[in-house]
Image: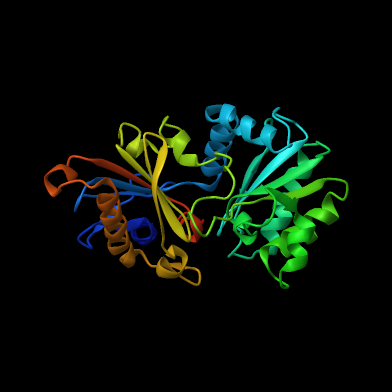
Amino acid sequence: TETDAKRRKQELSIVDAEGGEVPFCKPEIPCVSFTPLFNTKHFFVTSQDEAQMEKETMFELCWQENAGILRKFGLGDKKDLKRAFLSVGSSSTQAYDPDGLTISVPCGTKVTKDEALDALVEALRSTGVAYEQLVLINSIGYSLKPSDPVYVTLKDLASREQDGAAARRFYDVLKKAFPEAMLSVYNRSKDPSTKKYKFPQLINDFSVALTKGSGLPESVADFQPDVIVDWGGSSYKVFVDGKRVGTKEMDANGLLCEGRVLRRDRLPAAIAEVEKFVSDTLGNPECESSQKKVLIAQTGKARELALAKK
């Protein structure tokens, strides 16, 4: 009906840089252009695309570097079909192996959702693989200390944390489902003196795959960015030529999300803040900035709300 069509149009509206409404470029992948400081395009990455791109980066685009890290620390350098990686971020977790497993669930170190962990276990079981290793990487590794070894058992980390903490939640569920598997957490802590990671990190940033055109919605398929911003729930990372050149904390979950509501009216100001950091990081004069193409790919809780089925 006409009323339904009008309501649907309102649901599929977003705000541009001046606060006016514009239609989504693609309903299932909302995308909006901003041009205050750069030639910028912003879109929400679907959860499945995020998992697929991380997997591509891990096992294909950066496998040589990742194999060297795994070999160095005694985790084996082969694409072991009985080992799966769980990339536990602040708002979501992506899980993948070298074969058929690719899934993203909306729970992480700062977002708790029991049914999401159940879905993760079901996906792992559905592969039919008797996993011998489940390696937890990404944000959960910040819970470890620089004095810890490169990886510790999930049981060890869980024993240090309070009830409800991420390590405990993941350990309780995974240990029950896979009692024979080795559950470990890769250390992501930083050396307090250098502010750099204590250990070399496995490369699984989806932005690396994004530079190859993977996971792009049709609306930005022909957009060739000079800079890619991976914007998560608690921070964003700036990439140039597939290399990270800057990182900054930003609580997008708190800033843009109120319960189950996405505050789209706050998005332009948040994007302007991201652009300012990009400009400062690149050191570009204002006259050159407008020529730069910046692609902001957003995940986190804001993504979950933006792409939630009505």
